[in-house]
Image (cartoon, rainbow, N blue to C red; front, top):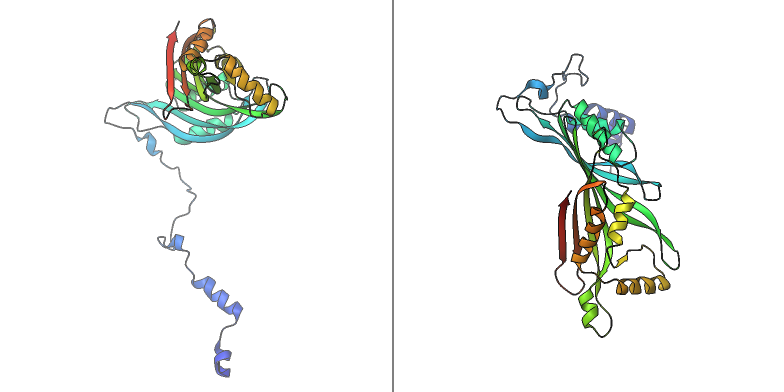
Length: 307
C-alpha cells in the first residue's frame, strides 16, 4: 500500500506527460545533432548525374522498369475501359555521361496521359527522347484489355481479358514499333477425334501475335486495330473462350470445337495466312502454346515472317 507521503510526491498525470514529451527522443533522429541543417536547401543542389564519366563505355539503355500506372484501353467496340499498364522506359547513355534523369520518365507519364494505342506509345517515345535529350529511346508497355463478350446461345454477358503490349524504339527519326496480343483459345485435337470411337480431347491454349506495320508519310507505323488481331487468332482456333456459359452455351462450344479440330501447328499457320494477306503488315511472329489436357507437358509451334 502507498503511504500518504508517497502519494503526495507522485507527479500528476499531466505533469508526467509533459516531462515525457520533453525527454523522449525520436528514434529516427538519433543520428542528428541539435544543429542539423534545414531540409530545404537555400542554395542550388549539384546535379551529380551531370558530372560526366571517363571510362569511355556507352550504355545501350538506362531507365525505369516495373512502373505500374493507370490507363484507359479502347476495346474492339470502341469503349474505353480502365486498366493498369506495366512500363519500362529507357534511353541510351553516351560514354561521356554518368547517367540519365530517372524522375523525368515518371513526369512524362503524368504529362502524356491518353488512351493506350500506337499513337500514345509514339507520343510517349518522342517525349522521352526530347526530355532526356537522347537520340535513342525505348518504351515497353504491357497491359490487359477487357472486352464485353456474350455467350453464343444464352447471350449472357461477361468480361473477357486479352493481354496486350507495345515495344517501341526510336533512333533519331527512325521509329520501330511492335504490337503484341496474347489471346486465350480452345483447341481440339484432330488425331484424338479421328482415332476415337467417340469424343476427343481438347484444351485451352494461348496464341501470341506480334506485328510490325508499314509506315505513313511521316514515318509513323500505321495502326492495325487490336480487334482484328484478336479475330485472326480466335478464328484460327477450334473455338473462342467465353467468360459466362449456361448449359445451352456449353453444348454449343463443345460441338463447335468438335467441328473445328486443329493442331497447335494449324493454329499458327491459320493466323499467319491471314496476316500475310494484310498489306499493312510488314513483319510478324506467331506463337501458339497448348496447355495439354492428356499430357504432362505442353505443345507449341511458332513462325516468323517478313515482307
